[in-house]
Length: 94
Image 1: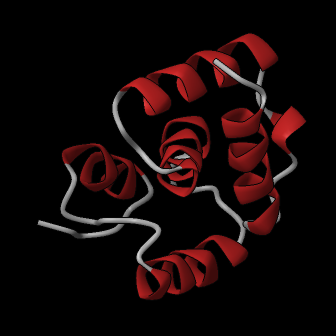
Image 2: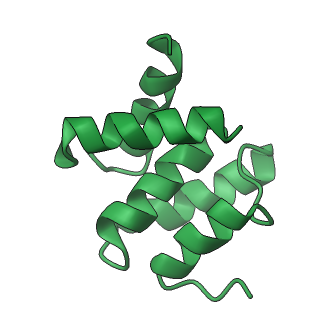
């Protein structure tokens, strides 16, 4: 995987006020590879990382980013991976 996709995921994490190095590097890299191979956008992958890594203990900026990214078409909340991540974060998306 090129450096470009992981860099975009890290930028998406930073946009949610989450330092990428808050997560173990090997785990984060593995999640990035899964997201890329699964056809997720960098923003969707970042959201999955937050869902699995932080659960309901996420910063307020995450909700702002979700709204902006939905409006910009960067996340699709109908994807099963995104539904599961949002569920882990305490959102009711059923």
